[in-house]
Structure formats: structure tokens, C-alpha cells
Length: 361
Image 1: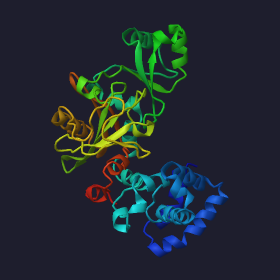
Image 2 (image 1 turned 90 degrees about the horizontal axis):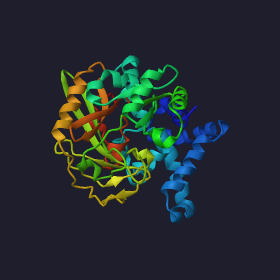
Image 3 (image 1 turned 90 degrees about the vertical axis):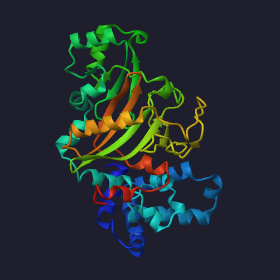
Image 4 (image 1 turned 45 degrees about the vertical axis):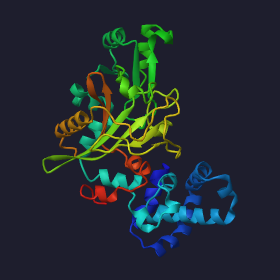
């Protein structure tokens, strides 16, 4: 059982407890975690090591308060320990904390809309590609046991370098750039190897020069969250992800930067922030200024997001990832359970009020 599943199981029945009751539940929750191997306690220590300064860790009184408050927030707000720091909960009162929508609450929110069938269409990258192929505007094939030699060799002839993505993973996990010429194996050996991989192979996206100025090594993408309701598509939030270093993916979970984007103007309104709360005004690899940078062809991106949402109204909430090429915006993928973390930790403002018209929060 994962850390999230354990926390959710422990907290489901006590989501709306009053503050005194939350404090009373700390000892039994800690005991339950100890009896189950202490996974949550270990997770707490890891996040304290990441986010607290040496001076804070050396202050025993502060550490006692902090650990108690972290347990309290896990119970009162279903707040994971990393979210506790990413949302700056130590600095906030109840009013501020209650505006944030945690990952566990997001899971309950997205399960209110759509169906397991529509979720699967977006969760499975191959099914998503087939449904929205005209918006991807690039070649892709499905690897795995059923990969046919003729299909693979034809793809390889056109694309000696390509992107391989795990079929059902997220956050850029397992994504890699494959160069067949540099690999050295024969075509037959590569075919046998990819038949054992549960991945989708995609023609690489070549982003336009303006987007490449942020970070040329990765395709820098816009996340646009849409909600179809009453015959209309609303844009809930938008943010931009930028890679760093030698990474080919732009996800914050892979060390990249995230910046909030004003949905009306396409202007970046926050510094670039990583999930470890490193914050930069200027990209360290390229020198590109972040706050105030305007995403090109912004209205075209919003129009594309609305068009794609209207093509799949069975799933009201979708988080789209888009990349900008010289020929316009293309879809990278769609997500049925797109996270709410980035639009909150970049701005340091919770979005509960923004989401209430769409979800029961």
C-alpha cells in the first residue's frame, strides 16, 4: 500500500473533524503507522530534511511543534507531508490552509466527474493518441508484444530518434529519448527489445524558437485545465513547465521549473519554482527571464483546448498539455486526473474557491 493510500485510509473518516478532535487523533494515527512499519514517519523525516534549514532542525522545540502540526494537517486537511511544505502551511492559519486542495482531496474531486471508461481513454497514452490523433500531428506506434516488424521498421526509417513513453505512467516518469543510430543494436534486436517494453513511441516534437529560448533541451509545455459544463468550456488554470539541465522532460517532479500563467493574457506571473521550492526569476541554464514572459500564440492555445474538450464532453475535467511548434500548437497528451499542486504552490494561494463551482470540495 502506498503512502498516499495509507494516509487516505487513515483520514477518510475524519476529513471534517473539528480542530480539537484532530489533535486527539494524532496518537492513534502515529501508533497505527508504527504498527504498519512507520512509512509515514519516514516520509515525514525525509521532507523535514528536504525543506527545513539546519537551524530549524537543530531547534528541538520547533521540531516538536512542527511534527505535531504536520500530523494535525494530515488529519485536518488530508495534507501530505510534502504538500505541507510546498503550500507553506507553517506560515498559514486555518483560513489560509483550508483554501488549498490537497492531492487526496483532488482524487475525490476527479472521481466525481467522468467514468472509468473515460478515465482510461486519457490514462492510456495510446488510447488518448488514437482518439485525438489529428491534434497530436505526429507519428506514433504502440510497442509491446503485439508490435509488428513492418510497423516498427517503417517508423524507424522515418524517425531514427524518437521519444518513448510508458503507457500508463505520469509526471514524466520513464520518458526517454531513443537514438537508434547511437544505440548500436540491429533493427531486429531493437524490435525484440521494444516488444518487451510497455511504451508508446512518438515522433519528437520540435518546439518553436521562442519556446526553446526558455530551455532548448526539453519541450516546454503549457498545462491548460478545462471543464465542460452546461454546453460551455471553462479554463480553470494554466501554467508553464520548463526543463533544466540535460533533462528531456519539463516536469517539476523531474527537477524542472513551473510558473503560473495568467489565463487571460498568457503572461507568466510567478517565478519558476521546483517541487523542492527552489525559486528563480531567471532560468539558470539559459538566462531567460521568467516573470513577465509572454507565451506566444496564447489565444490559439485556448481555442485548441476548448475544441478538444468539446470533442470529449463525456469527461468534463481534462488537463491538456500543449507544445508550440513553428506550425502551431500540438497536443502532448490529456489527463483525466491532472493535479492541482502546481497552480497552488507557484502562486502560494489555494484554489478551492475557484474549483467549487465544478467539484464538491
